Length: 378
Image (cartoon, rainbow, N blue to C red; front, side, top):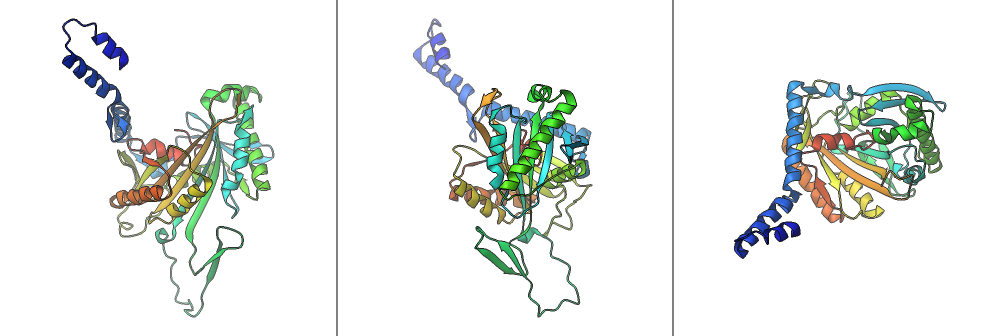
């Protein structure tokens, strides 16, 4: 701006009115925003979205094809069977959480893996996916059921002494969690070279990280199970909503399963009749208590499912780095005509919990992949 104004001062015959107008136009061109986004950033997102739409029209994508573009292999590393996937931008491996302890207790282990010198991977991610009680299909009734019997299920509350009791109904219909470790292409050569080079070095880096994560999580009371290639594919598909069966008024007409068509528009990413919207947490990171309350509130929204992804990444590629970059993504799913109301409810929850969320308009497809069990690449 200052350079433009200074250059115009030397143009002969330029009056102050024209000078002011030229500066204003230059300012709008450089800093003009549309709904909080610079106009040229919004244009770039729109062009990329249209390119993805054209590719989808040439080769329609179905839910059954999710994860088929990955190069998958199952390797034996450090005494365990581990699935390794390559998606063109990096390699990743996954672990399923097999305990009732909150998986975030292992976050101290994640930061220890990434900080310091010789970090073996580029990022570590935790994904939790919750199917609310109202979204779960009701169990089939049996003529032999005795109405006089009350089934009492118990689920751990916020601490070990607080137990929530509901007659015959769990607090959540289903909750899954996965950890994913990722090695990007950009840093793979150096890291692999230190461990034998090539594909062997990549496998050793991922296998070593998985082993450290399992050991550290076990000390925190969290049990992790490494996934083979089939388990890794299933985790990715499930975390993307490809395994979700819709309920409600649209369930009978919504196409679900492997034949569900995948599409993307400016405000959502769709798998059959299930629409998903991704939100990014931005600004100052809230405290742990604020995030915990937000996660609990989000899980109680009337959605088909909700997923929260937290990925940790080194702030730079310097050999010694003591800072971490944190990205938090929240993804909610509902029938297409109910998604905006669900998004409004999520936004209100964020305000109530003093958290800033921004809808990933124009980027919901890539954002959905980043918020799934893929390692958080975006």
